[in-house]
Image (cartoon, rainbow, N blue to C red; front, side, top):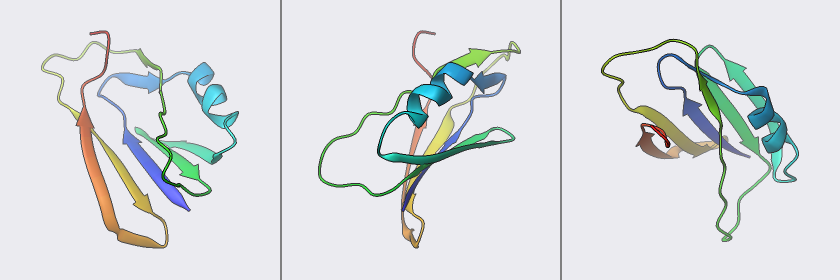
Length: 91
């Protein structure tokens, strides 16, 4: 099982429509939102490229917004952790 762990930008929440679109993908096993982190559980990955889009809604204006992290790792072997950072699109 592969986990994509998306830390949300300060002042943002994930939209319910975004969750619904992700949950309808066959590769997605489960989605959890805890505090300011979205966990996307995938059955497995293969060599095919995959794109996941989260729609966020700004609920609080934050000055000097800092990048948030995206971590991807195998649940059973978390030593292969991959980390990226994002500031969002459409800003």
